[in-house]
Length: 349
Image (cartoon, rainbow, N blue to C red; front, side, top):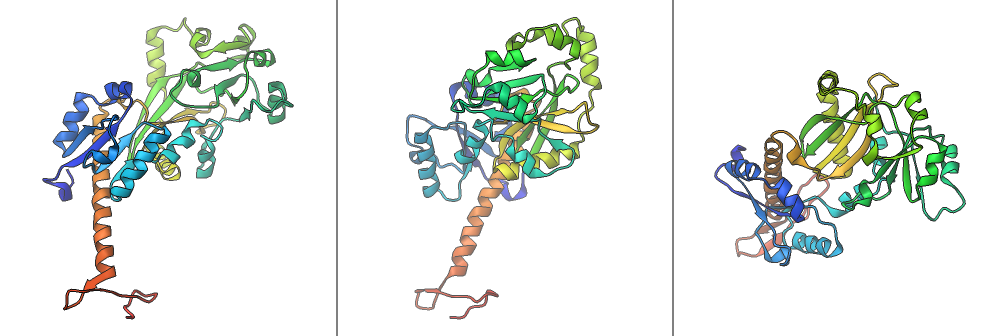
C-alpha cells in the first residue's frame, strides 16, 4: 500500500446493474481490495446518492438522466470525491460514428482505424451502394449498429461480402472495412494507469475463394463458415500461441493517450494487426467498463487503480487546504484578511 495511505481506509461506492455486479464484484476482488485498504460498498439505487456514504470515490455503469442528476448533486456536496467516470465522457463511446475519432487525434505511428462510413436513416438520397462507392469501401465489410450500448441490437453485426449483401441491412448503420488480421484480436483492458493485453480468437482471414462460395450477408452469430471449422483445437492453440503480442511499450502509450484524450479511467479497446502492412495496428472498437473479470488476476490491476484514486482524492483535499491557507490569513484580532498578489505571487495588500 502507498505509504501515505497506511492505516487509512478508502471507501468506494459502486452503482452497477445487477448483471454487472455479479460478474465484476467477485469475492476475490473484494478481499484483495480490502487487504490493501480499499472498501467497495454497494450503492442503494432506491435511495438518493447524496444521502449515502461517505464515499471517497464513486464508480458506476449507469447513464440515465436521473442518475446523472444524482452524480451532479453528489459532486456539488463532495467536491473532492472522484466520479469514475463522467457521463459526458462515457456517452462518446455509445456512438460508433464518433467512437473512433479519438484514435486519429492521437497521431501515433503504426496506429489507425479501418476505413469506415456512416449511413443515416434520414439520408434518403443515398443508398448503401452509393455510400460504399463514394467512400471507396472494399468488400468484405462489417455492418454495425450505430449505438454501442447494452441492448441486443447494439451487438448485432453482419459480414457483408458483396453488393447484394447490402440489400439485407438498413440504416442507421456503420460500415467498416474488414481487414485480414491472422484470426487474432488483441483486447487491451485499461484501469487508470494500469493496462493488460490478452489475445483472443477472432474472425479468420477471408480469402477470395471464401467470398465466392458463401452467402452475401452473414450475421456474426452464424459465421462458422469463416471460422475454419476443419482446424483442430491443437492447431488453433498453436496459432494463438504463435501470434506475437504488440510491444508492451506501444500498448501502454496508446492506452495512456486514449485515457487522457477521452477523460476515462475504465475502458478497453480491440486492436488488430493489419496483415497488409508490417507492424501496422488498427483499433476497431472501444468499450466503457468492460468485463474485467475475464482478465486473469483482474484484481491486481483494479486494486492499484483504486489506490491511485485514493491518492488523487488526498491530493484534491490537500490542494483545497493549501488554496484556503493562501487566500485567507487570520490577523491578531482573529479576523480573516484576504491578500491580493501580483503576477509573481507577492502580496500587494
